[in-house]
Structure formats: structure tokens, C-alpha cells
Figure 1 (spheres, helix red, strand yellow):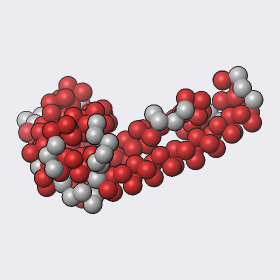
Figure 2 (cartoon, helix red, strand yellow):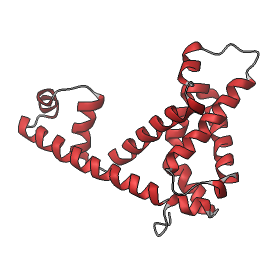
Figure 3 (tube, one colour):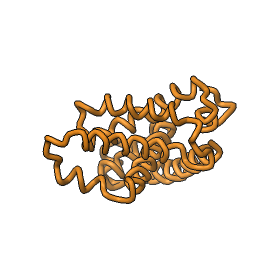
Length: 181
């Protein structure tokens, strides 16, 4: 990955390596997003069409906007196209409800934010990441985490506080980086 230039700028300039970097950075989040709408059987195909559209429209990407939102918006459109192509199939009402909103921007924005949080979480030290995962995704209290990890309650509180501050800074960095891309 060329760290000298932000990813979105590289993509807009149609740097061939940028597409690979986009895929390695956002591919798994985009696929998970697509699975919610088209299911796992079609998600890979829709992801491929999404990445093709990203490349074909790279020069149109507005580098003042968040790259992740632009990517998820394209993925959303490809998911809608896939669902429309199923005219003979019945589309699940819950799937249709998830697709509402002005051309999917709200849904795309929510998933873009989640992708950024997941990406930032991977950059935390393991001891802080584990505490935050247990607290926020596992729903455990600090005392329960202390018992689970066999560490003092104060250690869990300190790791959670440091991890939250570090996560916030990492997300700010991602937003700054995306704003420059």
C-alpha cells in the first residue's frame, strides 16, 4: 500500500494498486453488508460487480467525501439491482425495510461507520481490544470481564478507558485520512 497518498486520491487517479488496497481494506465489510441484502450465495458476485463499478467510476470519486460512504453506496446500488433482477422471486419484507432511505445513504453511512470502527479495533493493543469487545459486543460488565480475564477490576477499567480513548483517536485519524482522500 502506498502510504504516501491517501487511498481515495490514489483511486481517483486510477492507480491500479489502489483498487487492491480498497479491496483489502473494505472487502470483508462490503461483503458482510451485501450478505444482509442478497444472501451469502450472491454476495461474492455482487461484491465483484461493486468493485468493477468502483474501478470504472474511480475518476468520478469526489476526494472531499468519505471513501467508505462512496463504496457502501455503490454496494447498496448493486444489491438493489440484484434484488430487482429477482422479479420472479419474493423479496423478504425485512430485507426491503433495510433498503429504505434516500437511495440507501443512511444504511451505507451506518455500515461505513461500523467498518471504520472494526478497522480501528484491529489496531488496538490486544489487552484493550479484548476488554472493549467483551464490554460492547459481549455485553459484559467490568466486573464480569475481570472475572473472565482473571485480572483485577481496576485493570479492566483502566484498559477500557485507555482503549476507548485510543479507539476514538484512531477513528478521528481514519476520518481525517478519508477526508483527505
